[in-house]
Image (tube, rainbow over all chains, first blue to last red):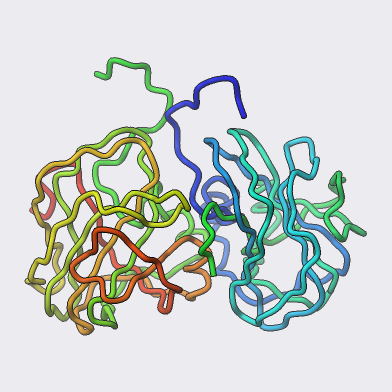
Length: 178
Length: 184
């Protein structure tokens, strides 16, 4: 929460993901990223994270992910602050429901304007998600990152590499997602 | 000239779910196809799409882009986001208007009303399953992931929305306008 009045800028979408304008949406749009398809991230016990700009004070109540054609293992979805400290997470849950959106409750969290990171950890190399497997340029513009040996979401994230692709997952301000 | 310093982009004069202040970025980033003539699909179904205003705006018109078949009545309106972030109370609407001419933009005048800065939902309902609008049709789970909602038996648009699970991801090209001259 900031000490200053919020400026009259854009407002945070009800649902945020790496495809939102407040994340990597403009980058993927401007760099002609492809439509998401069912793909595996391809490594076990990793965490992926995407930069997220929150323009106004909002409260997130749910996490969600759009699964691909093969579900496997467990997931953990959460939010980090700009210093890579974990603020909230779902905790480990089973990936369930092929090719559908899956939602998971989180402890309601109110966050003020600022930079954050959306993050998802996974246990399975074969678990699939709806991924726009774009390119390193989108990765650079999106601030997407990768951390090995990081399941469940670690208390502090240590970025180790870029991830070339955007995964369709995120947080929601409203309870009805799926 | 405003009385206050400008510190952000102003509202656009015409707003639809395809606007940057709605789902335009998500549509582009998800590489959705261009709108085409698509049937509404279910009579009396209402669909809702989130958007926001960065500053107050006076709404003077609603509009929609008819497809290749016109049928029944159309109702377009705007709803406040409720305390849960979903579509809540109706703030203004066109009321039932006969869908008139194929493949053209149709507009409807309303009594001007003011919206403040905030988050809202655009809503559209049709009395006819075969009425067509230029629409995006995307993966229904992508649609859920960007905040669409729907309500059955909702023509004319109801005073308050009871959202239901989204069944079909069809997003017509429609919206509101802050200016009077739109289709001509």
